[in-house]
Length: 394
Image (cartoon, rainbow, N blue to C red):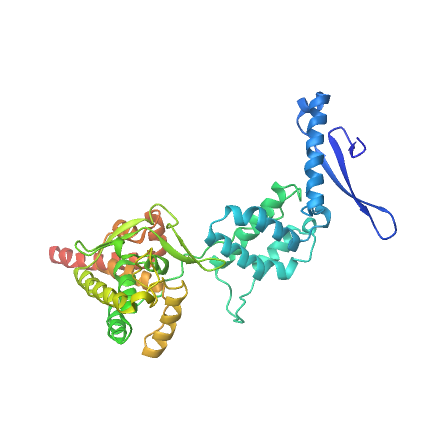
């Protein structure tokens, strides 16, 4: 066929006509395909059938407007293809949001206009290494954020190679950013926790419980938000972490925890269980007071708006930032309450394995890496206590 032309020993050119331009000249789109299957090349009928199928698939793409000439495709154009054909169909809501946000903030503004086949390893090396914060701050991006940018870029270019848009992946050769695990976590000591609890007495009941669970159980923000009363055993003082609520591209997303270990049962102190019982009674009274205005029918969220719907994922952080400023409490991140919970347990001599299970870490090494400094400090204090025994022997 005139639309299928042999170009080399294993290459064929497909041609699709798309009408005429303003000067009356035919417009054509071309696509070169290479066949590596030696058996297919030796069988004329099967080869023709294969080429015909590829031609009609190519023609359909051209006529539907889905085909973009690889040589002319910009990063911006390919981002749209990557998003629709891969990211939206394959990635989890959290990863999708993270990847698209970093690509839009750090990659597309810098090289979105460039042709994808012109991007070299050095372009990406400089781009990732020199990435800046987008909030106007002069602070350097954290190593974790740079790793997230790297992963987003890698996902983009891996698909470009996979779909034969480019022959080589320019990300290969870009060093994977190392996450700095040596940075000490910022936590409250026992005195500051006492000050926090005292200041929180003036806050709404639900926020007092939110903070209490973050400290007593080491819960992440998303885990706290995902709690329903069915997951709370008020008789035995146990909470069941089955789901989380996170921020997605278009709103909140309810989903399972990211790992098998993240699904876990956590025992609570007796005083916290008693406080939860009081809060449960308060919660039921509020629901009764709202009557028909309570619109949530499918879930019984511990932390909810007046009408029973769960809080938006960013609401606790916004409240926390305002609260610490208003109450004059030393500000640490809301997530640092989880770190505080761990250091309190370490100081009480709780074994790292138990702490790892309470946190839902995939393995104990994660716990050791994150809280190594606090564990070493506790180990040193334990050695000092033993010194009393051995000094008497001496």
